[in-house]
Length: 345
Image 1 (tube, rainbow, N blue to C red):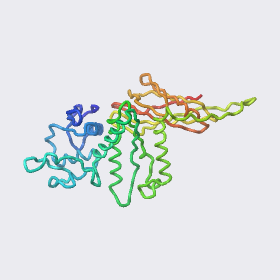
Image 2: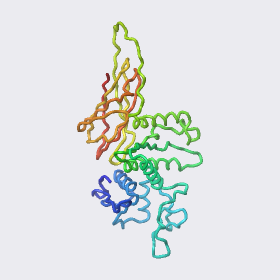
Image 3: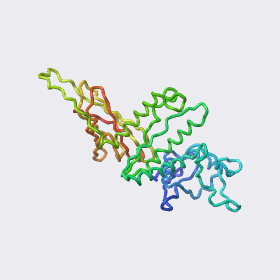
């Protein structure tokens, strides 16, 4: 886990306990008022190590434990069949002095109507492992859930928010250099009133918004095999009294961010009156951010200076047309948005 300041000013970090699962998190005093960056680090440690331990938290009572749990999402019932602690439905008392079995605390309760996010993401991790067993170089896309507002479930909208909040950290913890996981943000810009027909299922407008988000992320991993567009042959004019002007602009958008990483998208638009054959986008990171992956473009970097050029199939843009490329990058402390510039040829 990336180090982050705890509430008491110390650095919080996780130390793995065993090879497959488990880590001890130290340097943090639990409670319901932890800083956001500490909560993000704890979430990342949980998704990475599956089980995490905190020593020396004797100050916590049942209400304090519940307040801390709410920072990670809306707590579920402690267990659907095993009785919870008296007075608090979210806490399961682990008392082995009686007749309780040692394995009674397990969280494999995916059969309930609201399974914990960690249980669902654990299933995702299992699926990713099976995919990589067949192809270690598989590139994986994971889409956030679209907003929902069903008339029969007042809590479902917030459940989707809580689950989506856990996805970027899980993706960052599960990605590898050979098999990166890219998170597709289908949430931003989606409206249940205009983009669904029942508060849950997308209509034609919603389908279009979803495809507009998925397509750029999908074509990035496929860029090596993406067919180049067939060139249009036009006769060379005998005279060109005036030459139309070509130019381009580049606009950055932060689509996802988590502790230590973020996902960005840059829209390149032909702002001139003539078609362009190629484009180059440049920017300089202000806070030491570093690119780790790019799709729909070819990148190079020198220190904080980044250059992204078009690929063979997305360099030609008609007047007014646009294309996008995306990237993953690391950050630490401050993540000032870059201001890209664009040049065309």
